[in-house]
Length: 432
Image 1 (tube, helix red, strand yellow):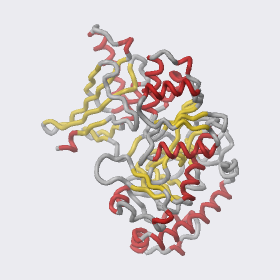
Image 2 (cartoon, helix red, strand yellow):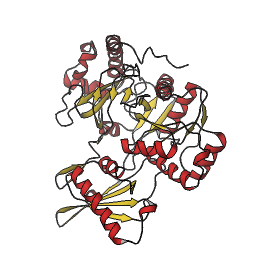
Image 3 (cartoon, helix red, strand yellow):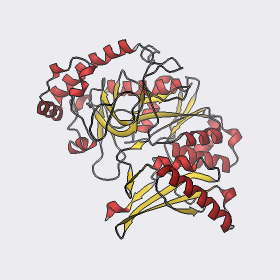
Image 4 (cartoon, rainbow, N blue to C red):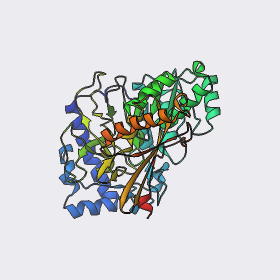
């Protein structure tokens, strides 16, 4: 049984009291059981007894992804291995992965967070939810699975891949919800419409996360699949999907502050920023005991809105992720986020949402190339029409990005589709 709305709708005063109590406990736990945190706090001259309320959080040290790599695999675990019931690892393709350890209590809290999200999307035990996130070391599959199970829904654990079979099962079983990356959902939508089975699909909602996506992609998914498309947010280092999710109002992602305390900081100065200001998202886990995280720098760029939501939930709402400070491309001195390109593509009806960016440096000058696809009905041998569309898109991108890319219009469906997290960029400058 999941929590009722008591935790999601409690007053800010009661919530801050709970956060303060939890912070005091988790800081003492981390200090006494994780040598890394003891040294970090000692270096700052901070002892556990100095942390008396949530207002003291700024006294604590930051944690970064590099800290997790440096302490690979279990140097940040705060309990004996006998209390760790599951391990997950990041999906990074270079170097050592980030390993996260969970106690049984942590797993239950994680499932609780996902169940809250699914409930906010209107899901119940009457639904059949297809989980098309990858199962395994990636947190998406098992995280969504456990949350749907805790809600009491029927789970179809398809994992990722084998798209034809996924669509067949989706029809035959009558799945009403789906959990996957937004890029894979778009691919599924393309294949469903191409195969002419759209009328057989009974999906009502989708829980999409694990990569940034835009309002324009939401509109496209909702139109092509006939669903309500919701954001679900999480990260391996904190708790996988279910750290937060949208509600029926689709006006920001509620973060479950009783378990995860969010801050926004200036990514350069690391100073805490006021509500509503865009900056880097930082989390402190308040009720995670296997591997507590103090002020973890997510590198996600967003803002927080503390105004009560129309749905009645008082949990803070996070704005859409604008990008990641470590994914940002600096091209000829201009900051470029891949999500900006996707947003522009989906504004122009002739283009697909698929793209691939190649950045290089030739004769000490940055080059910026983008492969894009026209929708099949607009792709032809009429070069004048193709040139006109390329010019239209190039002008819009230059206006939004502040820099002119070199556009290459490629054949429909020639850009590789992803069945997990989409890869949209290769920066060849880093390979030289």
